[in-house]
Length: 291
Image (cartoon, rainbow, N blue to C red; front, side, top):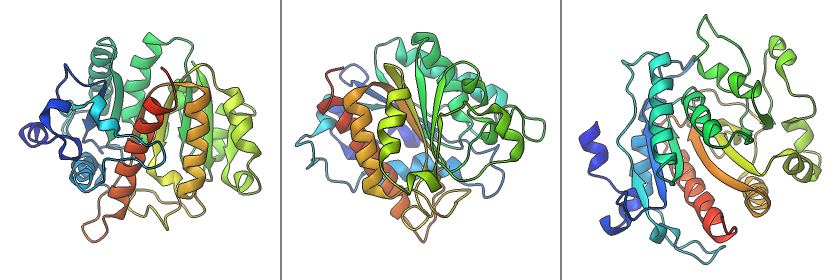
């Protein structure tokens, strides 16, 4: 697996834009799905993501930029499915911290959502007053699931006890998770559907430094069907970009992850959506802010 990743660059860009020395951005693949509770396969997400990246156009029309020129380094993959979820979280923490303290803009591609536990720990050490922008169909606030606190259903529980957690697009949760909600910080999909006021309200609640965690199932299955636990009634593409653009304009985004991409051999549009989203967020990061 490591050899496979080392042969790739993001979108097939020239190696001069893909070295750790020359790259502002680091992309950490985490091919791990051992905690997935319905359909497994997101361990193949990073590979499918990189394959799809080779087919995108590298000029972003909206920002009039070619952000790849700032450099995107693909780190060696962090974990595999033989790793316990506890050890995987520790490995993700270690690798994320390593690149953060090299002053890189650190991004991750999963893998199931449990990988975020480790990365958020690392970001929190460098930015103690950070807030988390969690984009997901599910609330992910269980303290444990089937006895495991490192399950993907628990991905935001630890963060919710330490940081401001703003949750967007939620439309599925267990009643037991209600007691762990941060009051006023959850923007349910049925409310988002009514008007755009949620954008302003949610951004106001974020601190200066923001880590974004994006579960692909925040999108409606009509545009992103290839995910492990799809839920009807999700966000559309342009509403999501409109929101992210506002976030990047007003806050300092310190990193992000994209998780729960579950490749389907018969349907690759979700792989491509994930790549376009990734590249769009980098374009917003470097072209809309001075950070």
